[in-house]
Amino acid sequence: MNEMKKREERDLIKKAMEENGLRLTIYQKSCFRNGALIEKILYKGWNDEGEEVASGSCLAKVLESIEKWRERESTVKKPTSATAQS
Image (cartoon, rainbow, N blue to C red; front, side):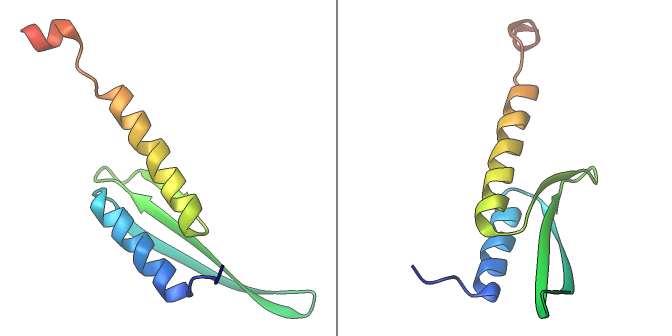
């Protein structure tokens, strides 16, 4: 399987964040490891309240993080039967 180009991965992450109503911040850092220049990228998604709710260093980790956030949101925001009847 071919690796996805960094630009394509960034575009897919941006789309996933936007589709979930999140703002995207990209942290990029370059460092030397064993004589080679390594580029590290961390993607973070922020909700309207400014809370970091999703993050990851690649598309798979970001999507997993978004899914976990969505699951937490759905359990926190479920209306109770008493609230629904009033």
